[in-house]
Image 1 (spheres, helix red, strand yellow):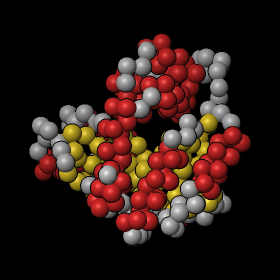
Image 2 (cartoon, one colour):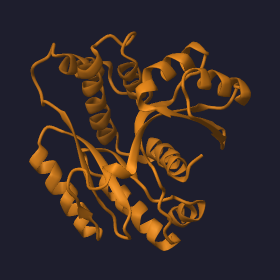
Image 3 (tube, helix red, strand yellow):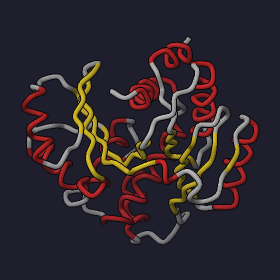
Image 4 (cartoon, helix red, strand yellow):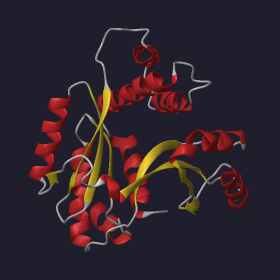
Length: 250
């Protein structure tokens, strides 16, 4: 498992235990709205929506909240905020590149908050295209390795167009071209696999190696950005090592 993915898994499990419920609901609502806007309100044909709804149910989000978010995204409900996706690029303290994906109803507020947070952490906001050329979008899936033979999963995922399949710490990761997202998700599900995470990730073309101290600075910057309400995902080209993860957890 790549360092950044391993760190993301640690944060996800920790967040499930101690994050504020309201903040989780806010992010899940935006995820559902966007998924419904992109692929319609039918969870049987819209995989991203079904995954977002499953995540919301796992967090005990009320059914009426889920239904309201789906209707808002599909256009059935005209009330409430109109969300849009916006991506910012920048640099962390230490030189690492950052891609910051946000969902917002107010671009001016979001860019001001992102710029302020980066500046306070010793980084800076860049122009569009300043760092994105260093990344490639990839389809990314994770699920529990329990009950699955890795060789069988490997063959199944490869048939769906996967480029890399990794097993570590009881979890399997599958990476593939972004254009293969739906084919891969359908292939895995038809193979009896219950997908836990499915998203498009920005994977660095050439990971950047920094000292443990500088890597931790980048990780802290990312966590501060992720604390902003409008930020959904942050990706970096910095190689997140096990040593840096251990230092961060300590």
